[in-house]
Length: 497
Ligand SMILES: C[S@@+](CC[C@H](N)C(=O)[O-])C[C@H]1O[C@@H](n2cnc3c(N)ncnc32)[C@H](O)[C@@H]1O
Figure 1 (cartoon, helix red, strand yellow):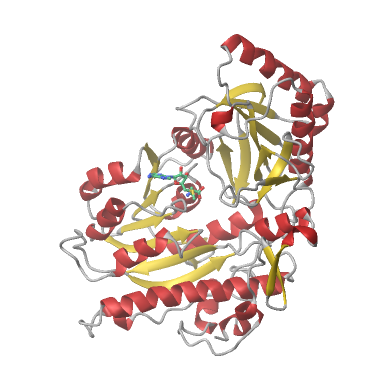
Figure 2 (figure 1 turned 180 degrees about the horizontal axis):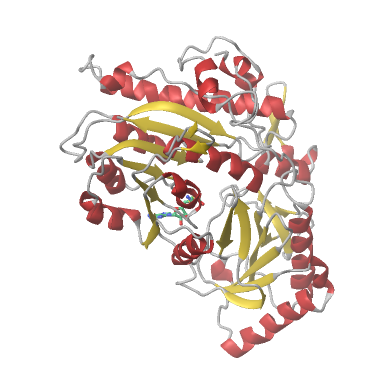
């Protein structure tokens, strides 16, 4: 499909093209892929084997561990950025083609269904990330055996437990990693090598030092969170090692990192929330702050924030436009009004950036710290029409959605779940609240569980699945590149009915 070639990749709201004019210039979605391009030929590099003739050999002997790590974490690093975008565009088109395939099958018995008639919808050209290298504002480094066998190595993994071989490789050469994150990882490695405690490689085999997460913001502020398995240590013994860690990063060699916050979490599970095991502030500021579309956001250690701040502005600008497409009239923006339901709202970024265009925003979020941030963020930005509810959306939403009275200006939903997608009960609640005419789905993995959600939003009414409300139809797709050098991107999909 020639879509990527025919549409400009200038920013969504660039001076040359407005959002509306771009959607008109794009070809309509079609599943006929005729042009074979680099994007079609590209295959992810195999990290375990290389081929010579018909034989396969383990790759360890000719490819460095660093190169193998780059192939795992940033598999597109050998391609130019234009080639990367072309590849991602094709990939998103294939996913949308699958969705259309499912839906056309599902509606075969109803040839006059509006969903079937609306299966040609525009897919805009992928919006590029304004920053391509060193863009990550959050990195998590593991601790495990390095290339030289040293178990106190801090980096990222190559290989899997299933293959029986995991090697922890320093991440210094990765294109998406900022210098500050590399520096903190190196210092943490030096620290644990000095420590008398062992690293925790497998929970059941003992050891204490675990991952470190590093977060930075546009102003260069840095937060580090060190995860620690207490095993059988007493609180007094743990306190000694916490003090050593603090001393190392504030007065010792680690002070070169100039940390603004140092957190410590004693955790016996892969991931613990603040409620399960508190994030203990050893030093500095409790929060990070970031600006998005002119609003200031507080981000707690436990809260989600998009990993690429510059691209997040592009994403949230797109989402705002699709949630509340206000127009400029007489020098000012006309308000769209109505209520916006922000499901999986995190620190409230989507709701708050849309707030001036609607009458009311209701956000729902699982992580307590993120909900506290969202309430704080609304208040600090003087936004008075947002309220945030904490809990699982599948528990909270079905209870109150039917009480949302229909206002003449309507009800819009925006959902931005984690990779696991939305719980079936959330889809049911959204679909069966007929006041919702417009739904914006933001997904970082549209070919995973999100695809199941798309199908449930658009399939024929199904009494058994309690999907009773009128079906939605996809009407516009906008891929946004949040993760240069990787095959991933965000997909913003507008559904209407
Ligand atoms: C991809 S993040 C998006 C956050 C926010 N929309 C943003 O742009 O920053 C997904 C969010 O969903 C939350 N979440 C995960 N499972 C949830 C559930 N069952 N109910 C409500 N929120 C959930 C996560 O804590 C996380 O904050």
